[in-house]
Length: 258
Image 1 (tube, rainbow, N blue to C red):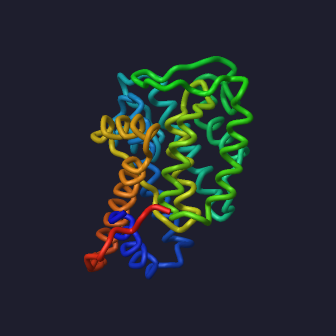
Image 2 (cartoon, rainbow, N blue to C red; image 1 turned 45 degrees about the horizontal axis):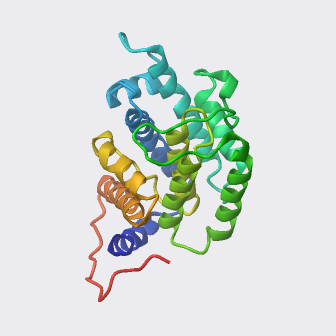
C-alpha cells in the first residue's frame, strides 16, 4: 500500500524531533485537543464550529444559541481525550480504557448508560448490516481485546489502528457515542506507537461513512483512508515546525498489507 510507505517516510522525519516530552508533548496534545474534539463531534452532527469549540474548552465560556448537549459533548469529549493521552505509555488496549473513555464522554448526556455496554438492540441508520446483540457484547468485546493484544505488534501500526476502529464500530457496544470512542481508541493506538493523532474533518464525512460500510466486505479502502489522514497529520506537524517534507522515491511495488 503506497500510502503506508509515505507514512513511514514522514514518520522517520518526525522521529528526528524526538523525544516528545515536556513542553513539546504538551504543545502537541493541546494542538490536537481542539481539532479532534471539534471534528469528532461534528461528524456526529454537533453544531459547534471549531472556533466555538476552542472558546468553550480554552476560555470556559458558553456559546449563545447552541444546544446544551452540543456544549456538553465538547467539554466531555475533551475530558475523554485527556484520559486517552494519559494512557500514552501504557501500550495496552483494554476494556477499562474503553469503558472509561465512554464514561467521561457520556456522563452528562445519559448517565445511566455512561461507561457500560448497552442492554438494548440498536441499528445504524443507513447501514445494511446488523450490530452485535446485547447478550453477545461482552464476548465480542473480549475477542476484540484478545485480537488487539495479539496483533498490535504484528501489523503496521496505522493498519492496526484502522482495524481497531473498524472492528469496534461493527460491534457497536454502547447505546450512543460509539463513533467518538472508536476514533479515540484508534488515536490511542496511534499515539502509543509514536504516531500523531489522525483527524477526520467533517467535509469527509460521507466518504468516511461510505468506506466504513464497504469495510464490512473489504477493509482495504478504509485502512487506506485512515492512513491518508495520518499522513495529513504528519505533514501538518512538519509544516508547523518548519521542517521540509522528506523526498519519497517511487518504489518498485506498493507496500502490501500484512
